[in-house]
Amino acid sequence: MAWAIHDESTVTTGCVKLILAFFVIMGAVPMTKGHEGTFHEEQRRSARYRAAEAQKADAARMLFEGMELPYPPAAIFIRIFKKERLLELWATGDATQAAPVSGRSRQDTLVQSTPGRNALAQDVPIQEGPAQAPWPPATSTQVPRPPATSTQVPRPPATSTQVPRPPATSTQVPRPPMASTQDHSPTTNEDQGAAGGTFRLVKIFPICAISGDPGPKRREGDGQTPEGFYYVDRFNPASKFHLALGINYPNRSDRLLGDRPTLGGDIFIHGGFVTVGCIPMTDELIKEIYVIAVAARAHGQERIPVHIFPRRLDATGLRVLEEAVGDNPPLVSFWRNLMVGYNFFETTRTLPVITVAGDGRYVFSPAGGDL
Image (tube, rainbow, N blue to C red; front, side):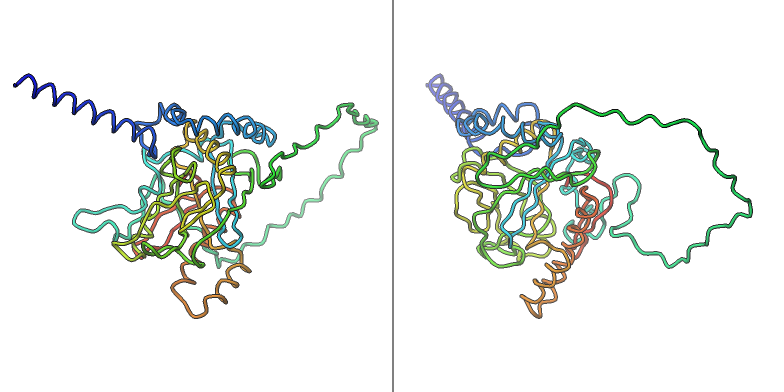
């Protein structure tokens, strides 16, 4: 009898391990240190991902190489505009834009905890290295000193009798720009900044639908698509919506400003056409986005930033939003806070370090890095 009990326990344990292994392989693969060495292999265990990679990987490589960007990419960045229903994919060849902070993501360490106090109520931003001044920089009221004038008479430049040699002409025919074969969205080869350290716009994808109204998600079941600064924290090659990239909603700002404890969760960029707070891209488009994201993650980018805005937050966009919501100071203040992060990237084409103050506001520092 004792032998039979031991044998049954062994069989049960083995079954549990098999079931857990099945869910790890077929379900969402979280972004953890244990997955770094085998992340791509785990994704390839999914027949759905293998099919997407076979269909999209070569085209993605050609797209990046045509823009003189490395592939797999050193770092990518996703920016979403709800009103325009657009998803922008940006990339850089600078691996430091994907570097972790003390082994953790910067947005994982938004607020420093103090013993005896609730970390969510703590108003102490993390300082990594030298203290950084908040962005935008303060304007100075100091009057600049006029430059000193010199009484020295400048010596006239020496004239040369050498006849300049005419420039050599090249017989090389310039290569025409790459044309996109995608029917769903245009690509662009526009240089959005210098190649070293800045991001360049790789491609713009249309979003099928956005649920809810302008404004952030504040509770479960409100039908809102979040607004704020997030990152990809899950890869699910077995989603009900084909392929899915999960974002880390609710982040610390959401937990401070939202209706706790019913904040909701499970916000994804996924395939299909249906949304109740998520970002649907169609099965065809999510294949390309997902394959590029897997390539970046497998190549070493621990966190892929995802910034979600109500619309393009230039001065005109903010004015339109203010007129639409009328007298709603908290919401307008929230959008003005997002606008600082929007303008930071528009100005520098680099990602800021983002911390969260005790009142839920995002604070931006002018040191590039992942979120």
